[in-house]
Image 1 (cartoon, one colour):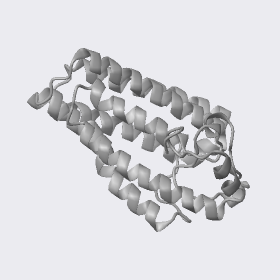
Image 2 (image 1 turned 45 degrees about the vertical axis):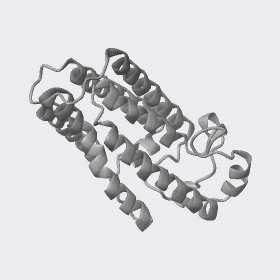
Image 3 (image 1 turned 90 degrees about the vertical axis):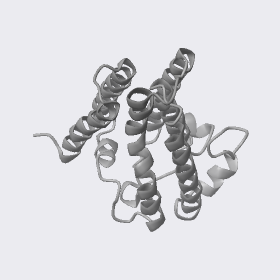
Length: 225
């Protein structure tokens, strides 16, 4: 029997497909199929790999976005971010296909595809490096949570967010939608705020994080911030 997390994942895939092609009003959208097919394959493969490589983290990442012990501010930020997340699957279809508001050159679409792939590789690299990378802000005392300073964490303190920004930026470009950059911008704002608050939380509650932050000075972009 599939777990609840697996059932939620399957339902999410169906819902995302319905939003993508429902907004476009047609199934004859090659960019939509490239985006949907790519993500279906890599999410499935990554899920299988993670379940074998780190089953505890896999189970944690299958949990809902609101959990016991999660700060109230984290719940609020995620609530504010959900509309932007959904818009990623709706706005491009309305823009690029149904109404034709945007005309994105092929070169930009290819660049979007590259960013999308690079961002996803960054996500996988981060997940591989950090067994404590749960989807909510929470110090996992029951798992003897400790600071991770290897892999991408040797470069910046929050590589998951940096990778997600690239991954999400590639979505509207690949799908040919300039208007799709609006939910991307909102996502950057919300997740950057979350990064700052999470960093403050870890400084206070995670032993050794203050010393780690003194060694790795930048949160998202090496040499910048």
